[in-house]
Structures are given as C-alpha cells and as structure tokens.
Image (cartoon, rainbow, N blue to C red; front, side):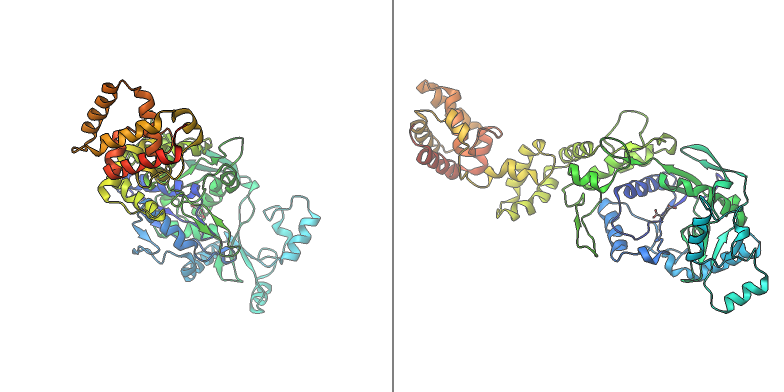
Length: 507
Ligand code: GLU
C-alpha cells in the first residue's frame, strides 16, 4: 500500500458554478499530490444529464487556471486513463454492471416510479433493501424467463446493488478515523439505468477511481454517507487491495450562526461564494466571483487552505510551496470550519503589501484607465508604494489616491470650515509664489524651503500645512505633503493652490 503512487482526482459534476468549498477540496488534493510527488486528475462526472449545465466545465477549468492549480491529467489535459468525461465512458461501465449481475451482487429491477410511489404509501419509511426486495418486481422475484421477456419487450429497468443486511461496514477515514455503519440502514442503490444506458454516480465513481488508479479520495464531508456503499462496491468487485484511502473534509460553515455556508450568506454579507463571476445560463442571474471582486488568487488560496487545516503552528501567510511542504491530512479538522470572509479580506490586504509596487501598479492601470486617467508607469508605481498599505483591494486605490491624478473638484466642507482660516487665501497665494521660485523640486528641498518661509515669517505651521493639504487633496487626508506635490509636479501644485484661493476665498 505504501508503495503505491499517489494519484488523486477532483471530480466535479458540471451542474453550475464551482462552489468555494469545491475549490478548497481541489486545493487540498493538489497540496497532497504535490507533496507526495503524485498526480492529480480532472474528471467530469456528468452521468446525470438532467443536471448538466452548459458552460460549467469551462467555468471550472478557467477557475483553476486563474487560481494557479494545474492538473496533471484529465479533461483538457490528456493522459492515458481517458476519456475523462464520464459521458464518454458509457461502453466501459456496462461490463462492470454485468460483472456484478453475474456474481449475484446486483439485480435487475423493473418497478416503475408509480409502483415505487404506491409502495411508499403502503409501507412506512419504505426502503428498497433486503427487507422489501422480495416483494418487488425484480430478477430476484421473477423467473429468468420473465426477466428476459420483459427486457426483450423493451421494458425499462434499473440495476440495483444487493446489499447484505446487518453487517458492520468500516470506512477508514484519514481524518475521522474508523467510521462504522450497519449495512441495514443502506438501500439497494441504483447503479445503472437502462433508459439512458448510463451508470449512476456511485458506480461510475468507483469504476473510474479503480481504472484511473486513484490512491486517495479526498472530498467534502457531504460524501461521507456514500462512503460505506463505496467500500461495499470495492469489495463486490474484489478490488479491496487497491481501494483508495478516504479523507472527508470538514464542511464550510456560515460566518455567523449555525449551518453550512450558502450563497445566501454571501449575498447577505457581501462576499462571493464562487471563484469567478457566474452567469446562470437559464435565469441570466449573475453571481459575484472572487476574481471580479478584486481578490488576488494567492490570497484566496491561502485563506481557503486554512479553512479546515492548520500547519501546527500559528503561521498564517504561506506560499503554495510552503503549503505543499506542510500539508497534512492528520491536521485537518473533523468539525466544520467557519467561513470567516473577513479573514479573506485580511489575506488580500496582506498579499497586496507583499507584492511589489510594480505588480500592484500593473493591476491598478486598468482601474485608472476606467477613470479616464493615463499616467506614466513610474508615477503609478510611486503612488502605489505610498498608498497600498491603506487598501484591502486594488480597486480601492482609486478612491484613496485619485488626487494624485486629478485635481480636487470640490473641497470637503467640514475640513474647509475647520482648516481654511481667515488668512489662508493670503498665505496660499504667498506659498504659490515660494513654490514658483523653486528650482530644485525634490521633496527634501521643497520641505526645507517651505519650512524656512514659515519660520522666517513666524507663521503657524499647522495652519499653513492644513490649508496646503486642503488645496492639494481636497480633504484632510493623504500621505506626506511634499511627496504628493513632487508627484503632481510644480505647475499642478501652483494651479491647485490658486484654484483653492479662488474657490474658498477669504472668510
Ligand atoms: N461528482 C462528485 C461531486 O460533484 C464527486 C464526489 C467525489 O469526489 O467522489 O463532487
């Protein structure tokens, strides 16, 4: 077992946008595979054609591309265990269904939906299992001739798994330890439907994991109830020796209160639950995505990695390589992980600080452009360097730093009332003259000369600087004054001073 090559798979059903919990599942699979020098497969589980949503597969692929999680094998990646879309593997599954039928581990059932409904009305808590299958229309109660005749007649049927009652089924879970359930609570699951000649999720999932040599099944907790059935299927096929190890990841919980995270929580509290924006092809509804909301993929990955796993110390900020080194299924929690979206915002802030000013400037350029600003790259880089520690998202840079690129069109009323004094107009006119005379416009020289001018004239430093800031920025905030003026330049500084004098005048 320990010799076995690590092969994991991420196997979504293309039923819509990829939920953020699915992203975490894929991430943990990726970390685990990379740590063990293994491989990760991308498989599409599309045997339920009723739930197929066009565009979902492409959406999922684009999400992982954005996130920087590459697959080694699978749909769109190739590999020698394909095809990797279950709908293209129809011919493969039939053989395995027949194998179970021949071994008496599965049987054919003809019960129509109406008959099943009638039975449910008759028997309280009806379940198709050892206690009821003897009274149903199936190959266990009908003769071989009758069964053949019904099939020849074109009657639709399903193949059900024959579960032996009263047996303790043990699922050895890498996170939860031994999970034991009694087989009597399981129903004889449908494995195959003649109507579409397709297996159900359970059969296709097991056959594919086997044929694709999957060594570890790491998936969400919602699949834990299916695991005993899956163990029984491996046994029925005689594949116990190569049965993958299971690990069921903890649920993602609401940020507040109880229960599992839903899209409604995101809508209510204002955070996305999908990696990318998603437009529902049926309703046209648009759901927000992390990418469009301005998250850096690295920040989202780091945030998700810690929702249900910890590295055993209090390190929070980790590169992908560090996470690959540190990841450990044993350090995944059994209990649900609260989706603290504010922590996600904190990670984004932190990653913005860690990135170079040049990288953030690249991301800021399109925002500037949207606002009609085209500025030289070195100016943008300088502004980013001064302002990035004040923002959580690149888009917020516009609001906090637009005064670098466009003169104020209005002056904050409260600030003006407090900081534009009786003599401000006169002083700012003088200051414009002082600046005009500067030959060296470096921040150091500006500061030295302006300070000297203030001292020589016995002016009030605070009053001068406050009025100066109001004239240049339009409000009372912003970084060091002379850093701002050296970016906007001498001419603009003078123009802004003159305009403030004109608009705010003498009180
Ligand atoms: N197709 C299932 C899903 O949509 C896969 C579950 C599993 O990983 O076994 O998540």
